[in-house]
Image (cartoon, rainbow, N blue to C red; front, side, top):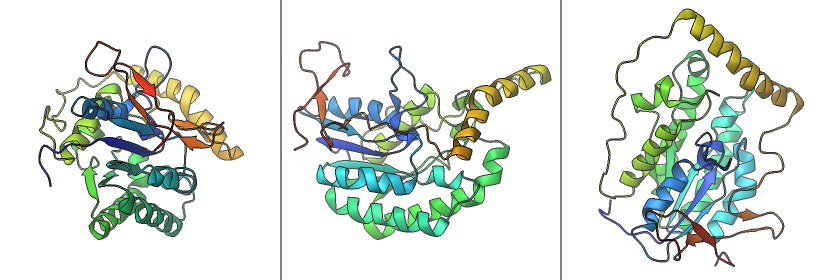
Amino acid sequence: MEMNATYTSFVAVGDSFTEGMSDLLPDGSYRGWADVLATRLAGRTPGFRYANLAVRGKLIGQIVDEQVDVAAAMQADVVTLVGGLNDTLRPKCDMGMVRGRLEEAVERLAPSCKKLVLMRSPGRNGPVMERFRPRMEELFSLVDDLADRHGAQVVDLYGAPVLGDQRMWDVDRLHLTADGHRRVAEAVWQALGLPPEDDWQALLPAAIPPRWATRRVDDLRFARRHLFPWIGRRLTGRSSGDGRSGAHFSAELGRAFWVTPDETALSAPVAEWRRLDTAE
C-alpha cells in the first residue's frame, strides 16, 4: 500500500450506509462517512472532486443498474462500493443473484479507478444480527474473494467490536450514529494509506445496563416509528429510496456531477462545496 498517498477524486456507490443515514444535519440532510472522508481528502489536494451516488434502500441489482456505470465513467482515483446487505436482510434472498451482481459491479469498477474500496459492513449486536449473520458472512466472504481477484482494498468494519456496540447505532437500529460514521471515515482513510488520526476501533466505556422499563419503552418506540413502517414497505414492494437520486446525480439531466470545495469559503476543513458543470 502506498503510504501518505494523494487522491484527486472520489466517488461513493451504495445504499443508505453510504448516503449517510442517520448522521443528520440541522437542515435535514445527511452527512455520513463518505462526506467526512471527502472533506478530509479535499484538505490535502487542491481541486479535489467528489460525488456521492448512494441512495437509501437500494438492493444490489439496483445499485449495479443505476450507479455502477455512472461511477465507472467518472474515472475517479477512489471508488467505494458497499452493497448487498439490504438483500441479505430480506426474508427471502437469492444469494446466487447477489453474488453475480456484486461480481458484475466489481468487474466494471475496478478497471475504472486507481483504488477500489470494498467493505465488510458493520452489524448491530442483537437478535436481528444473529438471525441474518450466516447470510452476511457469506456476503463478506464474497467481498474478500472479489478483492483478492481484482486488487481491491477491503475495510473490515464487521470485525471491529466497537461497531457492533448498540450505542453506535441510531434509534432506528439500522444506521450508525455520527460517531459511527466518523469511525468508518477514519477506517477508510487509513485503508487508503493515509496517516492515522484516531483509533477508530477504540472501545466505548463500559455501559450501565438500562432498566427493564426503559428497554420496553425504547422497543415500543422503535417498533412504532421504524419497524412497522419498514415491514409495511416490504409487504407493499416499496422502498425508502423510491423516487430518490444520489446527492450528486441530476435526475433531470440523467447524469452525475462533481462537487469541489468552495474556494470562497474561509473555514477549514471544507464547509461548503460547489457543483461543477460537468462530470468530466
